[in-house]
Image 1: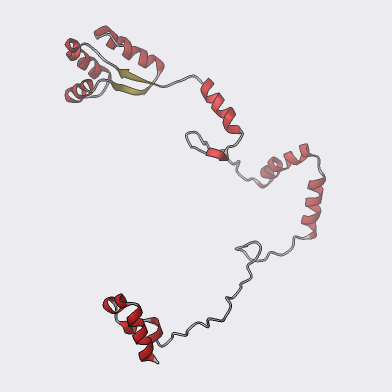
Image 2: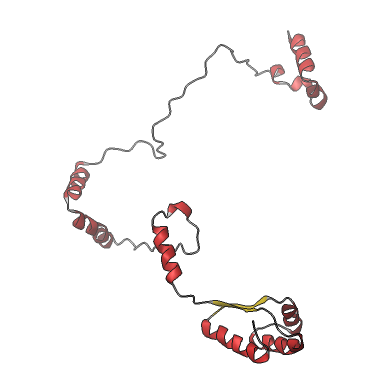
Length: 191
């Protein structure tokens, strides 16, 4: 029987004999029990809801009565329960998390439209100063002027000017951006 199985394995999988020892095949292992082909797979009963803490005891009568009283309150009084209970038990006030700059996609839903409208109305507070072009004769003056309002060395400022159009300074206030523009306009005409 085992010789017949060995012959069938060698014929069906020629790569098995070359890559591994054919006696390592599972039917030659001592703990191998062949599966009954007529057997049906086992069906396991899964719980409707997975509870990692196991079954919980039912709430006490006091808790049930308290829940009924809370449910019978008008909505205005129900809204006051949370803050009053937090003060009584001395729980810290949960701070809201800023989602500014995060893309929440469809999670935000209807609020997304109103917040985007507010962002469009909001005035821009930070600006980027960009040098578009200048006269080649004023290159040295432009480099000196760029060095005056940035912390760049001579080589870095020269490389920056040679890569025109380039952003000279990012995230500056409106007043600072206007001062930089006026200084450079005094040296060369910006377009």
